Image (cartoon, rainbow, N blue to C red; front, top):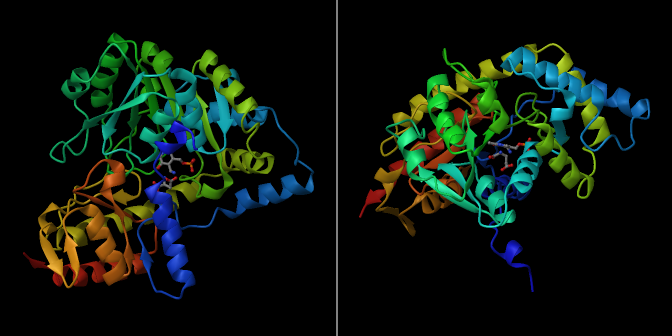
Length: 398
Ligand code: PMP
Ligand code: GLU
Protein backbone atom coordinates (compact mmCIF):
# COMPACT_ATOMS: atom_id res chain seq x y z
CA UNK A 1 0.00 0.00 0.00
CA UNK A 2 1.35 3.39 -0.96
CA UNK A 3 1.06 6.44 1.27
CA UNK A 4 -1.98 8.67 0.75
CA UNK A 5 0.52 11.43 0.03
CA UNK A 6 2.01 9.54 -2.89
CA UNK A 7 -1.36 8.33 -4.12
CA UNK A 8 -2.86 11.77 -4.45
CA UNK A 9 0.00 13.06 -6.65
CA UNK A 10 -0.15 13.36 -10.43
CA UNK A 11 2.95 12.82 -12.53
CA UNK A 12 4.35 15.85 -14.37
CA UNK A 13 2.72 16.23 -17.81
CA UNK A 14 5.57 18.47 -18.99
CA UNK A 15 8.20 15.88 -18.18
CA UNK A 16 5.97 13.12 -19.57
CA UNK A 17 5.61 14.75 -22.98
CA UNK A 18 9.37 15.35 -23.19
CA UNK A 19 10.00 11.68 -22.40
CA UNK A 20 7.36 10.59 -24.94
CA UNK A 21 9.00 12.64 -27.72
CA UNK A 22 12.39 11.10 -26.93
CA UNK A 23 10.86 7.64 -27.01
CA UNK A 24 9.12 8.27 -30.36
CA UNK A 25 12.38 9.55 -31.86
CA UNK A 26 14.17 6.42 -30.68
CA UNK A 27 11.57 4.42 -32.61
CA UNK A 28 12.55 6.41 -35.71
CA UNK A 29 9.42 8.61 -35.74
CA UNK A 30 10.02 12.13 -37.00
CA UNK A 31 8.27 14.11 -34.26
CA UNK A 32 8.58 17.85 -33.65
CA UNK A 33 8.54 18.72 -29.96
CA UNK A 34 6.96 21.88 -28.60
CA UNK A 35 6.65 20.21 -25.21
CA UNK A 36 9.92 20.68 -23.42
CA UNK A 37 10.32 23.69 -21.19
CA UNK A 38 14.05 23.91 -21.62
CA UNK A 39 16.27 26.06 -23.81
CA UNK A 40 17.58 24.23 -26.87
CA UNK A 41 20.95 26.04 -26.69
CA UNK A 42 24.06 24.41 -25.34
CA UNK A 43 25.30 25.62 -21.95
CA UNK A 44 27.79 28.43 -22.72
CA UNK A 45 31.38 27.27 -23.16
CA UNK A 46 32.90 29.25 -20.23
CA UNK A 47 30.42 27.72 -17.82
CA UNK A 48 31.26 24.21 -18.97
CA UNK A 49 34.98 25.01 -18.73
CA UNK A 50 34.54 26.14 -15.12
CA UNK A 51 33.00 22.78 -14.30
CA UNK A 52 35.87 20.91 -15.95
CA UNK A 53 38.39 22.95 -13.97
CA UNK A 54 36.43 22.27 -10.75
CA UNK A 55 36.66 18.53 -11.42
CA UNK A 56 40.37 18.74 -12.17
CA UNK A 57 40.98 20.72 -8.99
CA UNK A 58 39.17 18.10 -6.96
CA UNK A 59 36.16 20.24 -6.03
CA UNK A 60 34.21 17.03 -5.82
CA UNK A 61 33.26 16.83 -2.16
CA UNK A 62 30.27 17.92 -0.07
CA UNK A 63 29.92 21.67 0.21
CA UNK A 64 27.97 23.38 3.00
CA UNK A 65 24.32 22.31 2.71
CA UNK A 66 23.11 25.76 1.71
CA UNK A 67 25.80 26.16 -0.96
CA UNK A 68 29.36 27.41 -1.40
CA UNK A 69 29.96 30.78 0.31
CA UNK A 70 31.37 32.17 -2.96
CA UNK A 71 28.22 31.16 -4.84
CA UNK A 72 25.97 32.72 -2.21
CA UNK A 73 27.98 35.92 -2.47
CA UNK A 74 27.64 35.87 -6.26
CA UNK A 75 23.87 35.43 -5.84
CA UNK A 76 23.71 38.38 -3.38
CA UNK A 77 25.62 40.47 -5.89
CA UNK A 78 23.27 39.46 -8.70
CA UNK A 79 20.21 40.29 -6.60
CA UNK A 80 21.67 43.72 -5.82
CA UNK A 81 22.70 44.58 -9.38
CA UNK A 82 19.73 43.13 -11.24
CA UNK A 83 16.94 43.48 -8.74
CA UNK A 84 17.99 46.20 -6.30
CA UNK A 85 17.67 43.72 -3.43
CA UNK A 86 19.87 43.66 -0.34
CA UNK A 87 20.44 40.15 0.91
CA UNK A 88 23.32 38.71 2.90
CA UNK A 89 24.61 35.14 2.34
CA UNK A 90 22.74 33.93 5.46
CA UNK A 91 19.53 34.81 3.63
CA UNK A 92 20.37 32.62 0.64
CA UNK A 93 20.13 28.87 0.09
CA UNK A 94 21.19 27.03 -3.06
CA UNK A 95 19.18 23.91 -3.93
CA UNK A 96 19.03 21.23 -6.62
CA UNK A 97 17.12 23.37 -9.14
CA UNK A 98 14.44 25.99 -8.56
CA UNK A 99 11.93 23.15 -8.36
CA UNK A 100 13.71 21.93 -5.25
CA UNK A 101 13.91 25.48 -3.90
CA UNK A 102 10.15 25.85 -4.28
CA UNK A 103 9.49 22.49 -2.70
CA UNK A 104 11.64 23.23 0.35
CA UNK A 105 10.16 26.71 0.70
CA UNK A 106 6.60 25.36 0.67
CA UNK A 107 7.53 22.60 3.10
CA UNK A 108 9.11 25.17 5.42
CA UNK A 109 6.07 27.41 5.77
CA UNK A 110 2.99 25.21 5.33
CA UNK A 111 1.15 23.24 7.98
CA UNK A 112 -1.55 20.66 7.33
CA UNK A 113 -4.67 22.24 5.78
CA UNK A 114 -3.04 25.63 5.20
CA UNK A 115 -4.24 27.16 1.97
CA UNK A 116 -1.90 28.32 -0.77
CA UNK A 117 -3.37 30.55 -3.47
CA UNK A 118 -2.26 29.61 -6.98
CA UNK A 119 -3.39 31.81 -9.87
CA UNK A 120 -4.47 29.59 -12.77
CA UNK A 121 -3.21 28.73 -15.34
CA UNK A 122 -0.22 27.68 -13.25
CA UNK A 123 2.97 25.73 -13.67
CA UNK A 124 2.14 22.03 -13.22
CA UNK A 125 4.29 21.42 -10.15
CA UNK A 126 2.87 24.07 -7.78
CA UNK A 127 -0.31 22.21 -6.77
CA UNK A 128 1.54 18.93 -6.32
CA UNK A 129 4.17 20.55 -4.11
CA UNK A 130 1.47 22.13 -1.96
CA UNK A 131 -0.26 18.75 -1.66
CA UNK A 132 3.04 17.12 -0.67
CA UNK A 133 3.20 19.58 2.23
CA UNK A 134 -0.33 18.45 3.28
CA UNK A 135 -1.57 21.92 2.46
CA UNK A 136 -4.40 22.80 0.07
CA UNK A 137 -3.98 24.50 -3.32
CA UNK A 138 -6.62 27.16 -3.93
CA UNK A 139 -6.90 27.93 -7.62
CA UNK A 140 -7.94 31.38 -8.71
CA UNK A 141 -8.78 31.43 -12.41
CA UNK A 142 -7.54 34.36 -14.43
CA UNK A 143 -8.98 35.43 -17.76
CA UNK A 144 -7.47 35.75 -21.20
CA UNK A 145 -9.10 39.20 -21.45
CA UNK A 146 -6.88 40.27 -18.56
CA UNK A 147 -3.85 38.59 -20.21
CA UNK A 148 -3.99 35.79 -17.62
CA UNK A 149 -3.21 38.11 -14.72
CA UNK A 150 -4.74 37.91 -11.28
CA UNK A 151 -6.70 40.98 -10.20
CA UNK A 152 -6.69 42.34 -6.62
CA UNK A 153 -10.46 41.65 -6.39
CA UNK A 154 -9.98 38.00 -7.31
CA UNK A 155 -7.17 37.65 -4.79
CA UNK A 156 -9.13 39.29 -1.99
CA UNK A 157 -12.17 37.07 -2.58
CA UNK A 158 -10.08 33.94 -2.09
CA UNK A 159 -8.27 34.82 1.11
CA UNK A 160 -9.49 32.98 4.19
CA UNK A 161 -8.19 32.54 7.74
CA UNK A 162 -6.27 29.51 6.48
CA UNK A 163 -4.42 31.31 3.68
CA UNK A 164 -0.71 30.91 4.23
CA UNK A 165 0.82 31.99 0.95
CA UNK A 166 0.31 32.98 -2.64
CA UNK A 167 2.53 31.85 -5.49
CA UNK A 168 3.27 34.47 -8.12
CA UNK A 169 5.16 33.48 -11.25
CA UNK A 170 5.96 36.47 -13.43
CA UNK A 171 6.82 35.97 -16.25
CA UNK A 172 4.56 32.96 -16.17
CA UNK A 173 4.88 29.42 -17.30
CA UNK A 174 2.61 28.55 -19.19
CA UNK A 175 1.00 31.86 -20.20
CA UNK A 176 3.97 34.23 -20.58
CA UNK A 177 2.01 36.78 -18.51
CA UNK A 178 4.14 39.53 -17.05
CA UNK A 179 2.88 41.71 -14.20
CA UNK A 180 3.59 45.42 -14.14
CA UNK A 181 5.10 46.99 -11.03
CA UNK A 182 1.79 48.66 -10.06
CA UNK A 183 -0.12 45.41 -10.49
CA UNK A 184 2.33 43.62 -8.21
CA UNK A 185 2.05 46.41 -5.66
CA UNK A 186 -1.75 46.06 -5.57
CA UNK A 187 -1.53 42.30 -5.04
CA UNK A 188 1.25 42.41 -2.48
CA UNK A 189 -0.50 45.14 -0.44
CA UNK A 190 -3.31 42.63 0.04
CA UNK A 191 -0.82 39.96 1.08
CA UNK A 192 0.66 42.41 3.56
CA UNK A 193 -2.75 43.33 5.04
CA UNK A 194 -3.45 39.64 5.56
CA UNK A 195 0.06 38.65 6.58
CA UNK A 196 0.47 35.98 3.95
CA UNK A 197 3.71 34.86 2.37
CA UNK A 198 4.43 35.63 -1.26
CA UNK A 199 6.39 32.95 -3.05
CA UNK A 200 7.79 34.75 -6.06
CA UNK A 201 9.03 32.39 -8.75
CA UNK A 202 11.31 34.59 -10.86
CA UNK A 203 12.98 31.88 -12.94
CA UNK A 204 12.04 33.54 -16.27
CA UNK A 205 13.12 37.00 -15.12
CA UNK A 206 15.62 37.55 -17.94
CA UNK A 207 13.38 36.33 -20.74
CA UNK A 208 11.24 39.41 -21.30
CA UNK A 209 10.29 40.94 -24.63
CA UNK A 210 9.29 44.20 -26.29
CA UNK A 211 9.76 47.17 -24.01
CA UNK A 212 8.46 45.36 -20.92
CA UNK A 213 10.20 45.55 -17.56
CA UNK A 214 10.66 42.98 -14.83
CA UNK A 215 9.99 43.81 -11.18
CA UNK A 216 11.23 41.61 -8.40
CA UNK A 217 8.48 41.51 -5.77
CA UNK A 218 10.78 41.82 -2.75
CA UNK A 219 12.07 45.11 -4.13
CA UNK A 220 8.64 46.75 -3.93
CA UNK A 221 8.62 47.71 -0.24
CA UNK A 222 10.54 46.82 2.88
CA UNK A 223 7.55 45.15 4.59
CA UNK A 224 6.80 43.16 1.46
CA UNK A 225 10.39 41.95 1.32
CA UNK A 226 9.99 40.28 4.76
CA UNK A 227 6.98 38.32 3.52
CA UNK A 228 8.52 37.37 0.19
CA UNK A 229 10.38 34.20 -0.63
CA UNK A 230 12.21 34.83 -3.88
CA UNK A 231 12.95 31.78 -6.00
CA UNK A 232 15.27 31.83 -8.97
CA UNK A 233 17.72 29.54 -10.73
CA UNK A 234 20.16 29.06 -13.55
CA UNK A 235 18.28 26.49 -15.65
CA UNK A 236 16.52 28.83 -18.04
CA UNK A 237 18.77 31.88 -18.18
CA UNK A 238 22.03 30.05 -18.80
CA UNK A 239 20.56 26.99 -20.47
CA UNK A 240 21.64 24.85 -17.52
CA UNK A 241 18.58 22.67 -16.93
CA UNK A 242 20.56 19.51 -16.30
CA UNK A 243 22.98 21.09 -13.85
CA UNK A 244 20.26 21.50 -11.22
CA UNK A 245 21.05 24.79 -9.53
CA UNK A 246 18.29 26.94 -8.07
CA UNK A 247 18.26 29.33 -5.14
CA UNK A 248 16.07 31.08 -2.62
CA UNK A 249 16.42 34.49 -0.99
CA UNK A 250 14.32 35.09 2.12
CA UNK A 251 14.46 35.99 5.81
CA UNK A 252 17.07 34.03 7.69
CA UNK A 253 14.58 31.93 9.73
CA UNK A 254 13.01 30.60 6.52
CA UNK A 255 16.41 29.90 4.98
CA UNK A 256 17.45 28.10 8.16
CA UNK A 257 14.32 25.91 8.03
CA UNK A 258 14.95 25.12 4.38
CA UNK A 259 18.56 24.29 5.17
CA UNK A 260 17.47 21.85 7.88
CA UNK A 261 15.17 20.12 5.40
CA UNK A 262 18.01 19.99 2.90
CA UNK A 263 20.42 18.67 5.58
CA UNK A 264 18.26 15.58 5.92
CA UNK A 265 17.11 15.08 2.36
CA UNK A 266 19.59 16.01 -0.36
CA UNK A 267 22.53 17.66 1.48
CA UNK A 268 24.27 20.21 -0.72
CA UNK A 269 23.59 20.66 -4.41
CA UNK A 270 26.19 19.17 -6.76
CA UNK A 271 29.60 20.72 -6.01
CA UNK A 272 30.74 20.87 -9.65
CA UNK A 273 27.52 22.51 -10.79
CA UNK A 274 27.95 25.10 -8.02
CA UNK A 275 31.37 26.04 -9.40
CA UNK A 276 29.84 26.33 -12.86
CA UNK A 277 27.09 28.52 -11.39
CA UNK A 278 29.69 30.91 -9.96
CA UNK A 279 31.20 31.22 -13.45
CA UNK A 280 27.75 31.82 -14.95
CA UNK A 281 26.87 34.59 -12.51
CA UNK A 282 30.30 36.25 -12.45
CA UNK A 283 31.13 35.90 -16.16
CA UNK A 284 30.00 37.98 -19.14
CA UNK A 285 26.24 38.05 -19.62
CA UNK A 286 26.24 38.35 -23.44
CA UNK A 287 25.05 34.75 -23.78
CA UNK A 288 21.83 35.64 -21.95
CA UNK A 289 21.03 38.48 -24.32
CA UNK A 290 21.78 36.48 -27.45
CA UNK A 291 19.46 33.67 -26.30
CA UNK A 292 16.75 36.20 -25.42
CA UNK A 293 16.95 37.80 -28.87
CA UNK A 294 16.63 34.42 -30.53
CA UNK A 295 13.63 33.52 -28.35
CA UNK A 296 12.03 36.83 -29.23
CA UNK A 297 12.25 36.15 -32.98
CA UNK A 298 10.65 32.77 -32.51
CA UNK A 299 7.94 34.17 -30.23
CA UNK A 300 6.86 36.76 -32.80
CA UNK A 301 6.77 34.22 -35.59
CA UNK A 302 4.88 31.67 -33.54
CA UNK A 303 2.21 34.04 -32.26
CA UNK A 304 1.56 35.44 -35.70
CA UNK A 305 1.32 32.05 -37.38
CA UNK A 306 -0.87 30.58 -34.68
CA UNK A 307 -3.29 33.49 -34.84
CA UNK A 308 -3.62 32.90 -38.57
CA UNK A 309 -4.73 29.31 -38.07
CA UNK A 310 -8.48 28.89 -37.96
CA UNK A 311 -9.73 27.89 -34.51
CA UNK A 312 -6.67 29.14 -32.62
CA UNK A 313 -6.50 32.32 -30.61
CA UNK A 314 -3.20 33.22 -29.01
CA UNK A 315 -2.64 35.94 -26.40
CA UNK A 316 0.75 37.64 -26.88
CA UNK A 317 3.17 36.47 -24.18
CA UNK A 318 5.66 39.02 -22.86
CA UNK A 319 7.99 36.66 -21.08
CA UNK A 320 9.32 33.08 -20.71
CA UNK A 321 9.36 30.85 -23.82
CA UNK A 322 5.82 29.55 -24.09
CA UNK A 323 2.62 30.41 -25.89
CA UNK A 324 -0.68 29.25 -24.46
CA UNK A 325 -3.26 29.53 -27.25
CA UNK A 326 -6.96 29.00 -26.75
CA UNK A 327 -8.31 26.12 -28.83
CA UNK A 328 -11.93 26.08 -27.67
CA UNK A 329 -13.21 26.80 -31.20
CA UNK A 330 -11.88 23.41 -32.33
CA UNK A 331 -13.92 21.42 -29.84
CA UNK A 332 -16.78 19.47 -31.35
CA UNK A 333 -14.85 18.57 -34.50
CA UNK A 334 -13.49 15.27 -35.80
CA UNK A 335 -11.24 13.55 -38.29
CA UNK A 336 -11.54 9.79 -38.85
CA UNK A 337 -11.57 8.27 -35.34
CA UNK A 338 -10.29 11.38 -33.62
CA UNK A 339 -12.86 13.45 -31.72
CA UNK A 340 -11.68 16.79 -30.41
CA UNK A 341 -13.49 17.78 -27.22
CA UNK A 342 -10.78 19.17 -24.93
CA UNK A 343 -7.09 20.09 -24.92
CA UNK A 344 -6.05 16.50 -24.12
CA UNK A 345 -7.84 15.05 -27.13
CA UNK A 346 -6.41 17.78 -29.36
CA UNK A 347 -2.85 17.18 -28.12
CA UNK A 348 -3.29 13.48 -28.77
CA UNK A 349 -4.56 14.17 -32.30
CA UNK A 350 -1.64 16.49 -33.03
CA UNK A 351 0.86 13.96 -31.77
CA UNK A 352 -0.58 11.05 -33.70
CA UNK A 353 -1.73 12.75 -36.90
CA UNK A 354 0.76 15.63 -37.26
CA UNK A 355 3.63 14.17 -35.24
CA UNK A 356 3.85 17.37 -33.23
CA UNK A 357 4.04 17.33 -29.44
CA UNK A 358 2.30 20.07 -27.45
CA UNK A 359 1.33 20.00 -23.78
CA UNK A 360 -2.44 19.92 -23.15
CA UNK A 361 -3.63 22.70 -20.84
CA UNK A 362 -5.34 20.42 -18.32
CA UNK A 363 -2.17 20.01 -16.25
CA UNK A 364 -1.88 23.80 -16.05
CA UNK A 365 -5.51 24.20 -14.97
CA UNK A 366 -7.12 24.93 -18.35
CA UNK A 367 -8.80 22.48 -20.70
CA UNK A 368 -9.26 25.18 -23.36
CA UNK A 369 -5.59 25.83 -24.03
CA UNK A 370 -2.50 24.02 -25.19
CA UNK A 371 1.09 24.99 -24.40
CA UNK A 372 3.77 25.25 -27.06
CA UNK A 373 7.34 25.99 -26.13
CA UNK A 374 9.41 28.01 -28.58
CA UNK A 375 12.62 26.78 -27.03
CA UNK A 376 13.31 24.90 -30.23
CA UNK A 377 14.88 25.85 -33.58
CA UNK A 378 13.17 28.21 -36.02
CA UNK A 379 13.21 25.39 -38.54
CA UNK A 380 11.27 23.14 -36.15
CA UNK A 381 8.86 25.96 -35.41
CA UNK A 382 8.17 26.61 -39.11
CA UNK A 383 7.71 22.91 -39.90
CA UNK A 384 5.79 22.13 -36.73
CA UNK A 385 3.29 24.93 -37.28
CA UNK A 386 2.78 23.84 -40.89
CA UNK A 387 2.04 20.34 -39.67
CA UNK A 388 -0.42 21.67 -37.10
CA UNK A 389 -2.13 23.83 -39.72
CA UNK A 390 -2.49 20.88 -42.05
CA UNK A 391 -3.85 18.56 -39.36
CA UNK A 392 -6.35 21.13 -38.11
CA UNK A 393 -7.46 21.74 -41.70
CA UNK A 394 -8.66 18.12 -41.84
CA UNK A 395 -11.05 18.53 -38.91
CA UNK A 396 -14.75 18.74 -39.70
CA UNK A 397 -17.33 20.20 -37.31
CA UNK A 398 -19.86 17.70 -36.02
N1 PMP B 1 9.46 27.40 -11.99
C1 PMP B 1 8.94 27.39 -13.22
C2 PMP B 1 7.81 28.31 -13.50
C3 PMP B 1 9.45 26.55 -14.22
O1 PMP B 1 8.91 26.56 -15.43
C4 PMP B 1 10.51 25.70 -13.90
C5 PMP B 1 11.03 24.81 -15.01
N2 PMP B 1 11.13 23.52 -14.75
C6 PMP B 1 11.02 25.73 -12.59
C7 PMP B 1 10.47 26.58 -11.68
C8 PMP B 1 12.12 24.83 -12.12
O2 PMP B 1 13.28 24.93 -12.82
P1 PMP B 1 14.58 24.13 -12.36
O3 PMP B 1 14.20 23.16 -11.31
O4 PMP B 1 15.10 23.49 -13.59
O5 PMP B 1 15.52 25.18 -11.83
N1 GLU C 1 9.55 23.77 -16.33
C1 GLU C 1 9.67 23.09 -17.57
C2 GLU C 1 8.28 22.90 -18.16
O1 GLU C 1 7.33 23.39 -17.65
C3 GLU C 1 10.45 21.82 -17.47
C4 GLU C 1 9.72 20.57 -17.06
C5 GLU C 1 9.31 20.58 -15.63
O2 GLU C 1 10.20 20.65 -14.79
O3 GLU C 1 8.11 20.56 -15.39
O4 GLU C 1 8.15 22.28 -19.16
